[in-house]
Length: 161
Image (cartoon, rainbow, N blue to C red; front, side):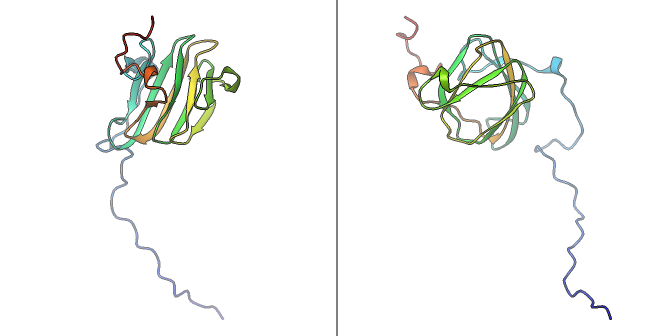
């Protein structure tokens, strides 16, 4: 003797799948040579940023790449959004804390994935070589230096003297 299930079956979805990005319903690809590197006002002048997917200034998912030449330090800062970093090339050194401390740096090789919760104070150092990271988050992207004097967006004529 078998029992019939009285649970309702879920309705079949008849709508089109929702694109990952608004207005992005077609297949496309981005090759490394097509990445458009630009200065970013919140970074030291030699660091470059490339928008790969989305618009990081708007609400919604985004993917960017960050390229820092050897020797560059990004002082302690935080982002309001959660971030996922994937190391593309070089060694990515990141430390957590409100003060730069080289002893707190952790080294991540190409292929490593680093999950950074929002509002986590941290710092980076391109200690051994240039690095490229790919960063994914939900915008809008934010970056706040813990010491406003470290922020390149703030005019500070005494800085660098």
